[in-house]
Image 1 (cartoon, rainbow, N blue to C red):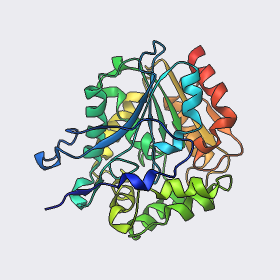
Image 2: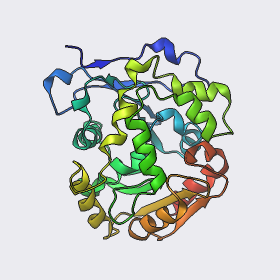
Image 3: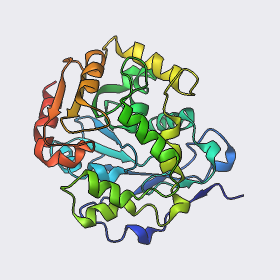
Length: 304
């Protein structure tokens, strides 16, 4: 029985300004030996850096292409840069069975990747679902982490209650078998060119590749009955200790689904300066404005 699909390489041929070498790794899925050949895609640049490692984790419905403005700036600052495509997104394989989609499975894949790559002196760079998952990781082995940069994210639905627009967004995805990613990115990011919108649609040649777009929102830890809520609650309590070196939260003034006031609440328990840094012109997909703030961001990270 087929368990996953693999986007043909030709789908990515016309993508501009993102010509980093793609690496693949397998044996990250704990759920079944049937997934031993399931591939996770990532980029890994400047591996000899002694300035620390950045691991970029995107959200829904994007992939590592989201970071194309920030990656060159990070490399210029002499960081090692890794950017991973979550299962079902980007160049990673696309699960076609619904039972693949559990919070634990996605989180375990990220933890296994960090272990397999033997990453240390690590700063996580997170957006949206990347934050929902990524903020639960450091408590497992705090010595590996130097800090976190987190853009527009919810951790769970406990301390920071989900905005009604975000709940509606979850429902919209659950009921949609064929999300038009190209149109979504064009509508919510007026600064994008058509070729950039096409790049976000590229991983999904047709709707048979899109189960992750439908299922990932459905496993958000909304309540204590939701798998993933308990581990998110544990992470929330851990973060109140504020024990990593440099944690910065970055919000936007124009995000309709994760409003700035929600990020400010999260900042109080996660940010080492207890401040939400605001990108005034940005919408939900803040890294798309990275060319405007990237230099200052990584300078502040270094100075931390």
